[in-house]
Image (cartoon, rainbow, N blue to C red; front, side, top):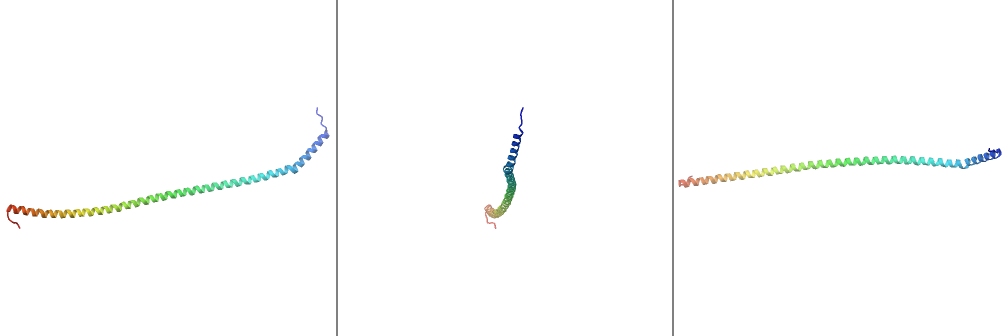
Length: 143
């Protein structure tokens, strides 16, 4: 059986209480303050990091929107340039067709004039030949 000596028990209890009191007063309370400061600083840093992350995400979204806007503007500009080029091409083709049509009309008129000149010349030659044939047949000059 264990015999407890109350004197030692009381001395150990008082020593433990005094030691606990001094540890609490000088060591544990200071350590708790340090831990609390560290936690407060950690929370501040975490809040700042969270704020910076949100800000970075906002800037990233803004950059993506700017890129998308620039891309849409570039596509619109390209489409506009293509439409402009197409219209210009049609205009050039139309002008070229008009010039070709005018040139063809001039050539047709020239051919018609030349054909008329040749026809009149042939008529004169035919009349002259016919007169010569008649004169040979009749052996006299016909007026």
